[in-house]
Amino acid sequence: MNRPTGTDGSQSSTLRDEVPWSDSITSYDRQNSTIYLRILDACADNASVEEVAELILDIDPVLEPVRALNAARSHIDRANWMVTSGYKELFAG
Image (cartoon, rainbow, N blue to C red):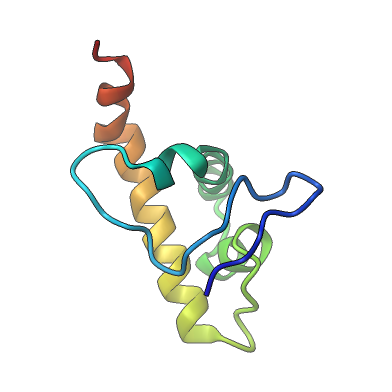
């Protein structure tokens, strides 16, 4: 399920339940870089996967526990990939 961008700027684009994976930076990554940064910040503050799902991805982990877990894990994994590997592509050039 995709969610539209909020007018308050809380989401930079429509979010997917699963990040489209690639070995290079995608347009989805570029559109959601702010989301990735928010996720990394939340993880650094020891936020739970449920908190990431609810507060950043806007998925209620009580009502949709499987979807919330899968979406949060997918975005956490991609955010981590961006800071360990993907960033290199940003600076190549």
